[in-house]
Amino acid sequence: MSLLSLIALRKPAQLFGIRGGVHPEGRKFLSANSAIEPLPMPALLRVPLQQHIGAEAEPLVARGDRVLKGQLIGRARGPISANIHAPTSGEVLAVGHFTAPHPSGLPVPTITIRPDGRDAWGPRLPRLRPEDASPEALAARVAEAGIVGMGGATFPAAVKLNLREKYDLHTLILNAAECEPYLTCDDRLIRERAEEVADGAAIMARALGVGRVIVAIESNKPEAVAALQRHNLPMGLKLEVKVVPTQYPMGSEKHLVQTVTGQETPARALTAELGIVVHNAATAQAVHLAVRYGEPLLSRVVTVSGKGVARPANLQVLIGTPVADLLAHCGGLVGEPDRLLLGGPMMGQPIQSLRVPIVKGTNGMLALTRAETRAAEPHPCIRCGSCVQACPCGLMPFEMMARIQSGDLDGAAETGLLDCVSCGSCSFICPSSIPLVQGFNYAKGALAEKQSRKHQQEETKRLAEARTAREEAIAAAKRAAMEKRKAEMAAKKARDAAEAAAEAAASQEVVK
Ligand code: SF4
Ligand code: SF4
Image (cartoon, rainbow, N blue to C red; front, side, top):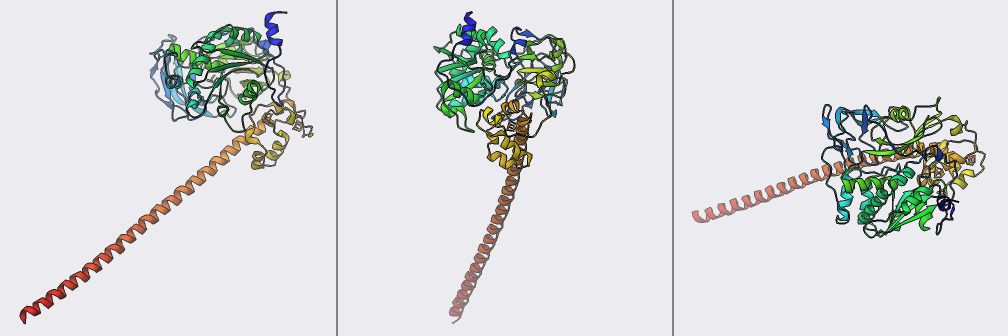
């Protein structure tokens, strides 16, 4: 038996189980042996200004401008936002709206660039020596470089690094679980660039001010485990590699923390409350490039897979590249796929058009055949309880769904809807093929909209009441001023009368 097989099969030591979860067929073999290939320069890049959680970036260029590779073209707005940079040199063709890589298919503000083929860099950010830089300077560099969580969460990475200001942190966990079937982009990245990933982890540990760095990786990636074990960390840190069981959704942040440390993060709390911050492996590599080489986040590795793709592969793709270019490079579609997804089959988002662009959080592009999707007509719930057993968050999916279907969104929230991490385990296991997670995603959106409307109404009412109170206060002040003036005038009149009387009396005295 080879060393790699032994690593994969050995019983993970000192790990704690997670509740629920499922074991979908991995199908990683389709792309796991495809080394990362650079995708040729696309004819057009469509770079959305909203590729992250938080406020969309403010455009800094206009139609007709020439841009250089790495140039800042969208500036982060507000504390939770991310900078956007030109992925290559070229001409700005438009600053307008374009279809988002999202199931809604709604247009989002987007900068369209026609590459000039020179791929000419603008001035890069100055290189930093993380050994000498302060945690604040490292976090500021990550923000400057526009780095977001590249595992799909897309939360601005610098905001997470700054959690040291609020929490007593001690551990960074690098999430290399990659538990979604088909996806192998993180696996390949670690196998081919382990040193960069490990260095990025050490830089983030320094920015967080923690002394412990753990890489958590599923047992189905023995080569990546071996690659990480070959690398030492700089700055006197030690890399602990923890092989976790291959089980979906192991990559969910809170479940990974629980598996590695045995500590459960309370519902709707951050893992930082336990002193732990989790970052994705690809995010670590982006941090390495930003700090050591001054390179903003311009491209990422994307797995193109599924039996609907002629040649599954892992591609290094510029942000903004249309999905159609990835498919064309991989030999195109085989027949008519049943589903086109960005991301994995469990949590990925269906796309309506091949023109939508790859964004910072896109880890996969899947073309799945009908045999792979196991698409079936939904049937009524038979109350088998399988979804309850599969839910890693301890929820009752069938109960939440019943409430959603009866229009009782508040009731669904009371039964835990907002604790649902949208992992899709319940939908996967349901023998009645009920689209549970789709229902939960819809309900969460509807609840958020309802809350936003309620908040707006309350805000409008509060502003109206404040205005009324202000107007009443002004009127009362005016009334008081008038009363005072009247009193002063009356007092003056009385004084004048008294003085006149006194004068009259005095003149009569003189006459006498
Ligand atoms: S798994 Fe499906 S059929 Fe079974 S209880 Fe849950 S929703 Fe109902
Ligand atoms: S999608 Fe939500 S309800 Fe369903 S298993 Fe995952 S966490 Fe539980």
